[in-house]
Image (cartoon, rainbow, N blue to C red; front, side, top):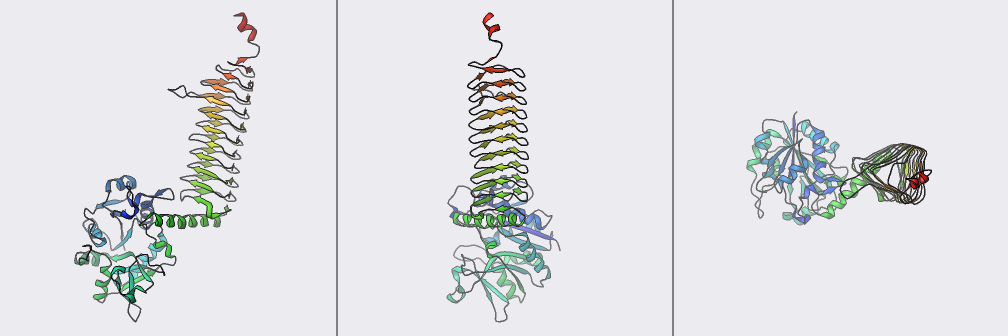
Length: 453
């Protein structure tokens, strides 16, 4: 059977108290809506239909391609929202799955079970329910003496007896498409909100003597919908717990999962240890046998095997195998530590490469620089790379030794195995093997020539 998926994302989300559309609030580093879209895309090759309304343009710009858009100009309830998709979906699929952009924790496995149950169902609807003692505003699932579903009663109109029911409607459905398109226009207008609700289709189906099947969530947290920032924080906690558990079962040691923040796009190799208060964000990859943290933030970086990152911040940087940094180091965009390179405490690297085995011990800044293999960068070394208009490059070749507090005024080159004295201000290139010192730095052996000149 061919499946179409509909994701409802037209609501205003007023309880978020934000200028940003609710479904664009970030959850673990990505917009909330991305989770629903990616889950739907995994179910079928047919692009999901996204029903938008409030701030539709911003949502379109965020989600981009890979979905089909339908606009609900007036927000007149969930039944009215799905009705807007009839024109493009009728006759295109046998089943229609309806889910929500603000339910990011639903898994592909759960939705697949829902679809498979409806494929076996002789009736027109299979619905998702959960059993919980905290109703969170969900409607109650009413059953008859034989245990068959007869209706869904919204909390606002439920009787005291119905309010005691702990089986709740998660409001996610898989419909027989032909039946759905025939019955959507018949949904009655609900008062006092003047809206049309999908829940009424359950009573319509059972009133016709047709069977409504149910899939009950094994993990009720999957049904968590985001209506407030409190809910957003709750979802973040659940998602973080899932992600951390997956990595621990894959061979990663997480010393304290409660204080470890790993976004879904991150990958980590076996036998790596993650210490507390570590944040791994974006598309970061971490190799095997690494030690990361504590007190570390890494975003969109590539970390090789056997690396160590202690109490440092890394952004759009690369560490090759056996490199290390910290404590209190900072790798900014374009930084690269080659194999075995070392950056110590309070070192900062921006758009620069430290060659294999190069060392920058402490209190130094390298910007727009290229440092050769086994070079030594002394404490307090600064590349003066910006003249107020343009950035300039510094090249430090293999085996060079840069003395403490050296200022390298770019553009400048320090030759192979050359040295600078402590406190030197280097404004001209230093030849291979030479020693330069002073302010401005002069190459040793050239003093007499300069005096004679």
